[in-house]
Length: 117
Image 1 (cartoon, rainbow, N blue to C red):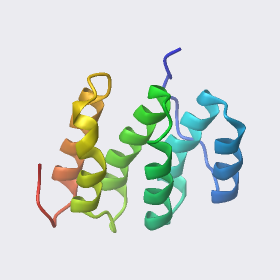
Image 2: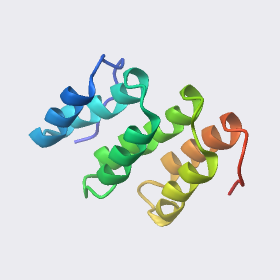
Image 3: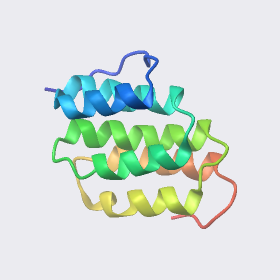
Image 4: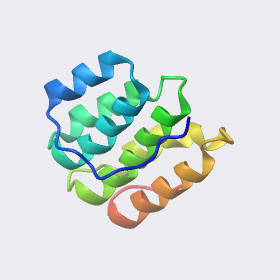
């Protein structure tokens, strides 16, 4: 099943955690996409995204990658070097490469400080 992006839904940290625990892939992807728009805690989001990248489901990984790119665009605290370091190992996963490249473009465009890939 391929995740179909929809308009982000408002979500809190508590709701995010409950949805992740549910194991329902579509709900998890919606929560990931919504989190970057509605949870204003950069460090917490980055930690959640790192944990979620360990999931083997590529739809979840893809939603995380997309959200990391959105985080660079939407959050003034976004750390270019940190976000690039998270994504760099994923460049070698053929199934995720295009999403990773898009997120890296967002990071390099919207984050001012730090090295680029």
